[in-house]
Length: 155
Image 1 (tube, rainbow, N blue to C red):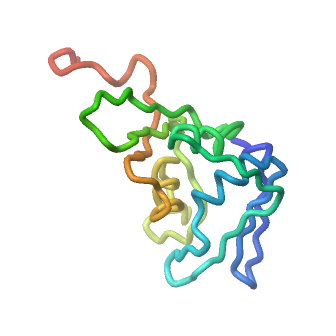
Image 2 (image 1 turned 90 degrees about the vertical axis):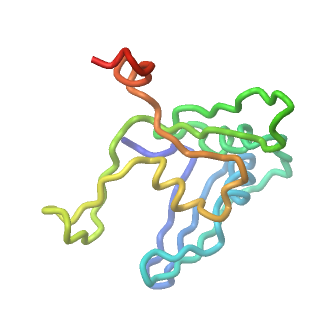
């Protein structure tokens, strides 16, 4: 699956920096709110930045924030913000990714090929980690017709 056509990721392994470049000012503003400035994987810390024009857009909901950040991203399915009925004071939002397994080389000794196999929801939870707004949950879309049957209707 190809990546977001509005995003280019520039990696400098020596400096341990990742720069997310975009010409979409609204997307840049959303990514600045979501991406941490530093992220540690294993024992290596990377700096993360966003390059490009940044709009002064104020996002009115978590749904709007994620819809903007992931617009045109082929891994993104949609987001759902259930209607608030007065009982909750949190902006619940479910960020739904497409139902695909992601594999990448990670020198994983538990895999015959050194790969990690995971879902986009796990990657998002790891990358956004502490920047994730309260009430946001990452999940994977269902395969239509295969999942979601009420109890008692399972084959």
